[in-house]
Image 1: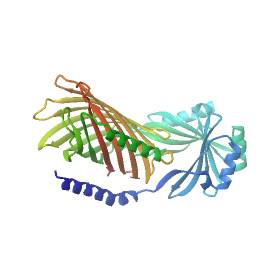
Image 2 (image 1 turned 120 degrees about the vertical axis):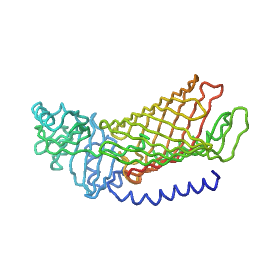
Image 3 (image 1 turned 180 degrees about the vertical axis):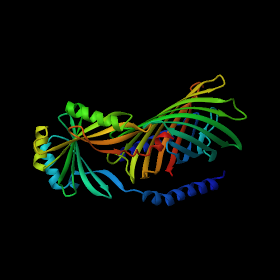
Image 4 (image 1 turned 30 degrees about the vertical axis):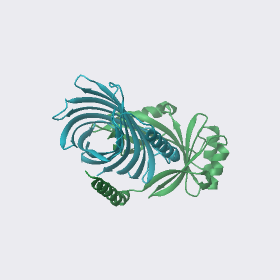
Length: 196
Length: 227
């Protein structure tokens, strides 16, 4: 192939790519990206800094068709925290990386029974404790590192489970007594570029 | 991270072009990957790859800086997802080079694990290559791949990411086994979850059974589309 032919091939390659890109990009809009602290609502910044004055805080903004949110991620006392706010800085919920052993034994028993009914086999990959409640009560709970009265505690689990002979990842939301609230199959990211 | 990846890429490109190697090839690798779902757990990958050489040198010869369109590969790989992370596949590739054809069969196992931020992929491939001139070649390959978002905790649409591959190939042809090592560092742009573009630099070294190693330096452009 001559140099001219190569340039033509290269040009066609790029033209096809540029023409196709907008069409593919319109399919879904959901995005999470890191932001600087000066882009965070003051109310959220003040709350997190007052509870975790010594921690390095990473801020993220999540945009989707259903709404936008601001999230603070940090490590403190050996635990990983995710604190979610709405766009104006109102606290939504707190998630703390946890272990299933932190659930009561009664709760674990119920959860195990429910999961066994839903899945042929399963393995718990990740557990997060979720706290929802009034801002003042969440603040108190975070300072004391234990859920105070008025805080609704739930568990968010990522499991690898088999249903109808097919293995997938699922997000399970359960009450603290082990009853499952929701089960959602996780759509796995496209990883073709890591395989081929 | 974004600036670091770009700087790393530039440093690699400039440093390798400066060093005079006695046995090397340098050029570009352009690749289009089209992935189509053919059934619930089955996917077909079609890959068109072309190699263009801009500079080369053989042992005992002078540097050749002329342009050369080296070859075109067209490959098909059918994979079945056997679990949440793992896939098995088999494929066929035909290579067009100097007016003749080379055929390759391959069998593949791959496993991709997405951690909190980093995605890690393991790939094991066995392939067999045949043509009318050379003895049949058998290769056993392992590749470690890593992908890191450059903004946030996951690679979202319209975001950049960094990718690193390191591959080891055991090559068996006739009675002269060899090893090839490959390293790739690239910057990717995720236009959408089914449309990614990667620009990178790949270094390969083989000829460990020769007196002089053979080295390759490639600027890579890869486009991944899922339909």
